[in-house]
Image (cartoon, rainbow, N blue to C red; front, side, top):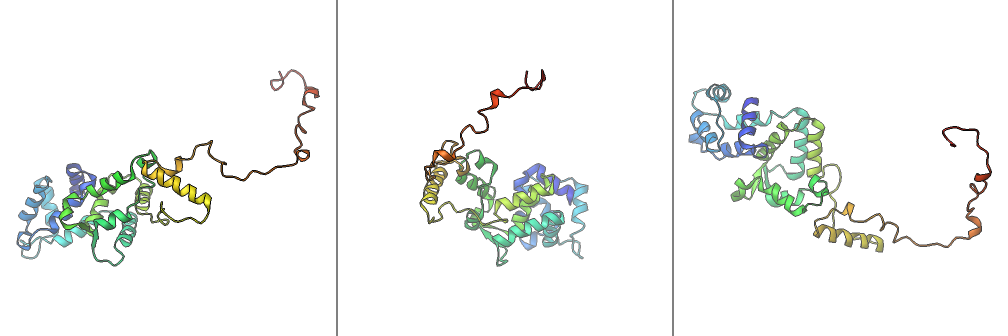
Length: 257
């Protein structure tokens, strides 16, 4: 199965690996044979060598030797994820599909997908365009207006195959759907004038495709602080340095030459 996943990533790309599950799920029961499955995979330009495909297909053939168990194949396909990464994906599924319906609509993906910590947003890319790019990865399922949880898990199989470290994969899952903290709401109501001004600045920044963390300049900090007048007699101006020129040095050293 690992060889099949590697071949699928090579032919389809890491973000299109879910098409394997999508294609097999749409097959008719009469076509669920070894020849039918291989023809379906060829339909998405996934060509596998005869010996490697025969080795994989032998694990999912029924007792009669003709029926191909697609459900078992999908489960084995998703099981190529290491247990640690499977848990991260399960947290994503739990958030996107809390009722375990097995289906996630595109509206839910748009609502839940968080790009505010996306590397390109930090470079002032348009957040809405990044959401559209994420949804475009599943354009083959636009007629169904969503994807199944198995297809989304297969999407992460492709991401995992090209991600070396477990920490990086977990971080991608966490940041994509805000698993570690509530998602930042740019239009949240504020109770103070300072927060209100900050919110308006953030909204204008969001519409201008700029990240709010980098909107305030160094000269802008402290403009909203209240100014207080202090008595000059308590300032102790030059108290520690007025006798500095009168002090004698300790000789010709590198510190006082």
